[in-house]
Structure formats: structure tokens, C-alpha cells
Length: 288
Image (tube, rainbow, N blue to C red; front, top):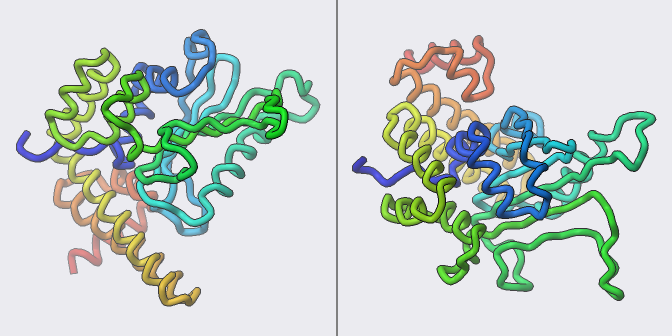
């Protein structure tokens, strides 16, 4: 493998790591949360997907949602760049998860916990140097914790240090890893990290997977660039055009590379979120 390994911060790789490997997911969750171990005996991983927050959004939030043995709902997402209103959004989505679990007529005593885990590749909390901040409801004056069901965990990759020798510290260094040597050093720390490195290695050596991951990253950057252009102009029309142009170019790049690799049109549709008719239309346009 001549090129550097793919990054676990890439949304495609992140999905493969935590959406399709229960053992890896379980070890990570145990490092972050304080749930009893038996909660992880039966994890139900829901289909990890891009969560669109505005009509037409494709490069927005990649999250993996799951239920534990007792029905607690957990959502894990990764963000590589700061987004406006990120605090409001994570609060809203966590509360929304709790409401979605409540059924009409249910006893409030059976209400499960709603837990969000947000991994950021930037510093979000400047009030302290801790890379893991856990937020729950409590009285600021008496420091009494409210026995509620909402919990938000913020994990900031840039804050992790080599001296943070905890299990979670190792996972955060795994997210920050860039070279084969970085990953191999961490793989010796635990079986779960070794398995995670195995997934990264296989994806990195698979030309189709690398193509998809790199196309996703390029599309995300294009989308961000066009969005920023629209924001700087201060015009809603400019922002909308930037979003649409970024999405269009990102999709074209994925379709172009996927066709070069002779991937089935149905697979390209699943990758981009496009209908088969839209993929065929793009393919015809690229052939012209």
C-alpha cells in the first residue's frame, strides 16, 4: 500500500467502520459511555445514512444510529468542519430522538435514554482542555444532577494528547491517525483497534473503495467551498447556487469515477442518493 491509508474521518470509511462492525462499535461505545456492559449484548444498528437537514442536502451529516439491549437510542456522528448553529442542532436532534422513542400511552418510566456522540475534527469547546465533555441536565448552583434521559457527548480530536493513555484516548488517536505507522502502533493497543485497522487497510487497498472515499471527500469540499462563497456574498441566491453547484459537481465526480470503475448504475444510485433515472441522465451527460 503505497498511498497513505484512508482516514476514519472520511464519511464513507466512518460508515464502514461503525455501521457494519458491531465488535468495533461496541468497544468504542464502552470507551465513551457509562452504560452497564449488558446493554451492549444486543445492539441493533439501524441503517447508517446521510441525514439531510435541508431539501437537496447530500453532504451534510453522516450518522450511525443504534439501539441498546434496553432500547436506549444512541447516535454517533462525525464533523470535520465547524457548522453554524451546531450546538442548537445537536440539542434538537437529541431531543427529537427521545420524542421518537415515546409511544402514545407509554408509561413515562419506560422512556429510554437518548444519547448523542459528536466527534469533531476541530475545537468546539474552548472553556477547557478536555477532549471528552459529557453534558447532562443539572443544577449549576447545587451541582445536583437531574435524573433525565438526555445526554450529549462531545469528542474533540485536536485536543487528544499522547499522555492521554485511556481507552478513549487511543480511539481518538485512531481518528487522528494519518500514516500506516500511526495505525499499526494503535493496532497493538487492543483487539478492537487491530480489527479497526484491518478494516482501514482493506478499504485502502480496494481501488473501488478508495475511489468512493476520495470522491466523497472531494464532493464534501466542493460543497463547503460553494457554500462559503454564497455566505461571503451575503446573498441567499448566492448561497443556494453554491449549494446546488457543489452538490452537482460532487455527484458528477462520483458518477464519473464510479463509471470508470464499471460499478453498476444501481450501486452508484445508492452511493449518491440519486434515482436510477438521475444516474442514467448524468451518465449520458458525461458521455456527451
